[in-house]
Length: 330
Image (cartoon, rainbow, N blue to C red; front, side, top):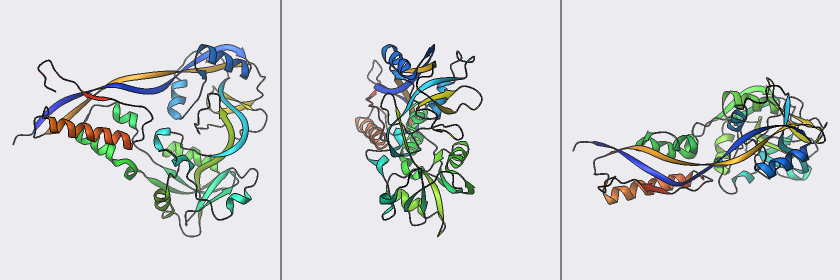
C-alpha cells in the first residue's frame, strides 16, 4: 500500500503558555517603592526563572546608561533547600522535595553549610560551598515549549515526547571546583548541576560516582524569596555574593550581568514584569497507511498526544482539536 503523507493542523484553542514580559522603569526608587509601582502598573517586580528570562530581560535596550536595577528577589525568613535546576516543567508534583540525607545528617546541619555533596551510595551531605571537589552536571536537550513551537513529523514528535526521563544525561566532571564554579561550568557546557526527583534517578547518578568519592549536586540552601512568591530557585550571583551588605537584589547591567545585593533603601531604577499568554497552532506531518480522517486513527493520535503532554507535567492547559476543511476532511 502506498504511504501517504498528510499535513494535519491541530488548533490548540486553550494554549495558555505564561511567559514574562519585562519592562525597565527609569525611575529612581527604593526596593519597596519599586515593588509598589510594579504591582500597581504591571504584575510585580521582575522574577527571573532561568537563562531564557535573563536573555529576554537583556533584549531591552533602554537601560544602557545605568549600572544596576532592582529585581524582585529579597532576603527574608529562614533558609530552605532548593534544587538549582529551576524549570518547573522538569518536576512533577512533590519531586522538588526529594532528599536522601545520610543518617542523622539533618540533625547536624551547620551554619553556612549551604551546599550538598553526594556519595557513591546515593546519600546526601551538607557541606561548605567553597570546598573544591568534583561535581555532576545534568545535560538536557528538549523542553515542552521547544516541541510545541516547531513543525515536526508526528513520528518525531512521538519520539521526542516519549523520551522523557530516558533522555536524561548525567555527566561526572572530574575537575575540582567550588559549588558556585561547578554551577557555572555546568551552565556553560551542559544545562545545570544535577537535580534528583526520585530514587530511580538517584540510582542512575550514584552508579557514576567512584567508590569513596563525593561530588557536588544541585541542591543548595538560601533564604531569598521572590516578590511575587514565585518558587523559582534560579540564582545568578556575582562572585562572593550575597555578602551580607544588603538584603535586596539588584541586576548588574554591565558585562558580567550577574546579581548583587544592596541595602533596600538605595534608590535606583528597576525591572517589572507582566504575564503574556500565548495561543498557537501546531502543524504536524502525519505518515500513515490509513486515511487520516478515519475516526479511529484520529482518536488514537489525539489520545497519544494528550497522554504525552500529560506525562511532561506541563503547567499550562491545552485543548487539542482537529482543524477541519469545509468538506469535513482533516
